[in-house]
Length: 111
Image 1 (cartoon, rainbow, N blue to C red):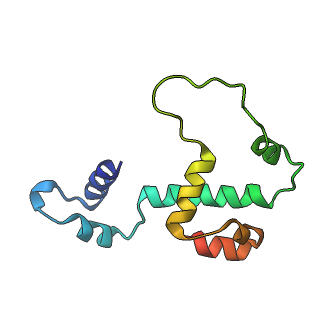
Image 2: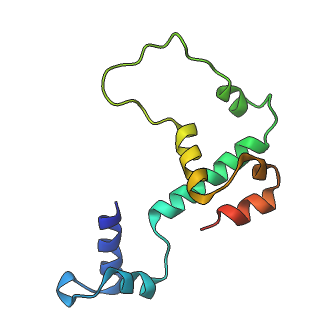
């Protein structure tokens, strides 16, 4: 994904690989944040929204579903949304208690 992103940024700047301009220089010139970082931010923003909802909200009821009788197929295990959020929070050194205060949560997870 990062390769496609830098290719588009080069195209926006009117540069080619033959110009031999480093990727970091292009990132500085354009002044945008990577798509991966924006995806992380939007995932955490939605997580904060979900955590601030009441426990009876349909979105929160889905968290409590237990799928013990579900048989998993062969191959690589699926990546669940909760696991991805947990990894993002470890990466940014956040905890779930911050979600209750919207202003603090938005300022800490902002890219």
